[in-house]
Length: 249
Image 1 (cartoon, helix red, strand yellow):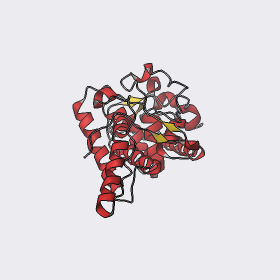
Image 2 (cartoon, one colour):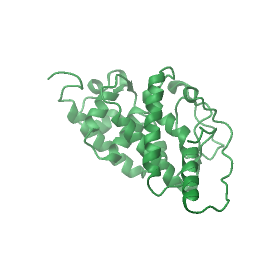
Image 3 (tube, rainbow, N blue to C red):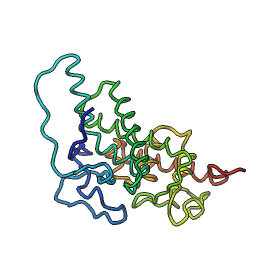
């Protein structure tokens, strides 16, 4: 398995690229905006200190040496791992080890990331943009599934209004005391939802990734992502009539 690399780039909409921020170790509430001089279409925020990642130097250019058969496929898988490992860990650890002080959470995140990479590697894969996004979608989905009975909570991504997505039947104050959506409630509400909704729900409501960045990171059209948030809101509103996970009716 390839070692974690220093920097990751993934092309976003319009052929632009985004890169995880150099301040990966900053607390969520204190993280400044990325410099506007960089061609950034999205940002994967997380805690680099907890992964021993230094996101400064760019990746070296890909090796253009001709390869055939098994060697070519192995090289493609290695390139995918090299490109995706750091941001995938960052995405999973946003919920499983947000403070960087939980070795069990980091280990769980590592296992989920390895599972996502292995799942994608079984298919026709490379280090291109769509392959990178496929890995991120798997990580988001697998991590959402891992939030069963999780005690944590998070504020929705900046710009996401819970009251709007919940609609008239929802109660944002009851769902999210102090503006924090419980991970376990989110996971329980979306357990039977389509994969796209679990991926979007994890990224935007659990990992607090902005809708613009989530669209670029997951490769989901912005309009489709908004439709997904509407479906998620209905699910969450419906869940408010049921006991919370772990409670007895």
